[in-house]
Length: 271
Image 1 (tube, rainbow, N blue to C red):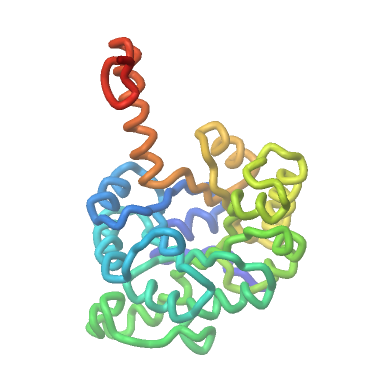
Image 2: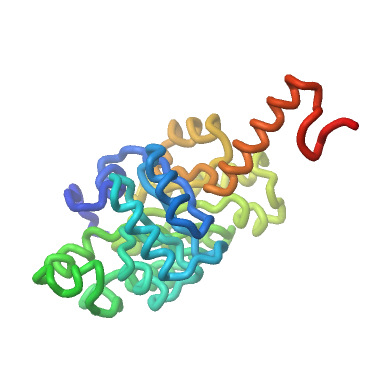
């Protein structure tokens, strides 16, 4: 399998991972340019607008990408399914990367890559829009897009883990992202992420990624876990999402205030 040795294009996240460096990002579940703007100022390497589980429209996604583009953060989109039409729509809105859920076979991985590439490498339809400056960029985007796009597949089932070496043979993969919730559920141990069997599956994917030079990422739930995964060699770390950050911040503030005043404020106040 042939892979680029030294990518030097316009996708900062791809550059960092090609250099073997870890990256840290988060998910955007709130359909709000303001939320995207705040998150883009925090210091993440990339942000993924989640269209699999959140109710974003493509019009909102385009405006969120416009907002993120004002910073150095790389805007990406998780599409709802491994569908070239959805990938095309997200890329035409300006996404620099596509996260494709539920990839379980080599054929499905190849389909994901093909959906993100212009011919002759893939099936992405050619059309004017904001990525080509409405056809005013004289072909610049078309010439660079296939190299610049970061195609991330999600490994979410034990069957995908069992086929991981075959999956990683697909040329054009920018990375693989482990979904702990779905993977643990497929193993009959939902949420039991400390189980040795689960950790063995995770490490199997990571080691395969190292052999095939495919960066591997994973969702982490704490700062400690993020540090652990970085030290293990993971390169694409996702921590929380905008909703969870909001929940945790609000709960922490209310809890601290109640500690200082004897639980006399908020809905949990003592009567």
